[in-house]
Length: 200
Image 1 (cartoon, one colour):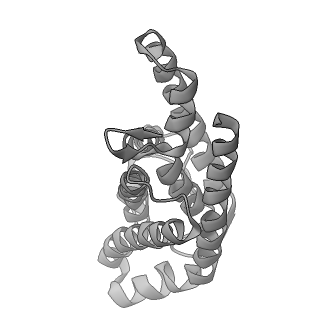
Image 2: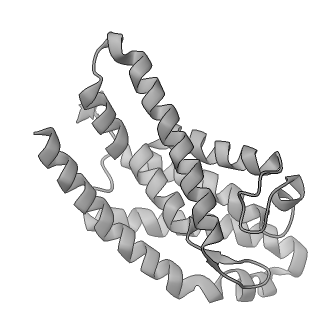
């Protein structure tokens, strides 16, 4: 679906197809609200699926963040990740190691901020038609992972130094994140193919 020359991301495309017109504006808002809640819940669950590493645990959050960005679009992705972060700041145990403002300003805080930047950026790419082929999805996912690690390592290095941040906050996760990129690269085009069929 094209809107003002842009390609609508996956979930907004589905929602728009079933709630077009001004009469259904409230229905679309409700759908976006539900998606934001679901997204923040999935982020919380994915944070608990982890392999312990110090100082940064390996979780499935990266994959969920990338998929939220590509399927939600920039605005809904930003709202969803922000909702997740706000819940954590308020003390809800949504992060990999708990919750609270001290978690955000702690060693792993940069990764969480990176989630927000990455998802928003991928949402912008999705709004320009990226994510419908495995090639554009793979490039998007690589860029998204790069943003997360850039933010995370930059912040982590203020605690343990740049070299240690690379060794402990990047190297251990290369293979796992490559696998996540591969999964997402095939999942997105498959999802689009399914949506194209049901909307025809």
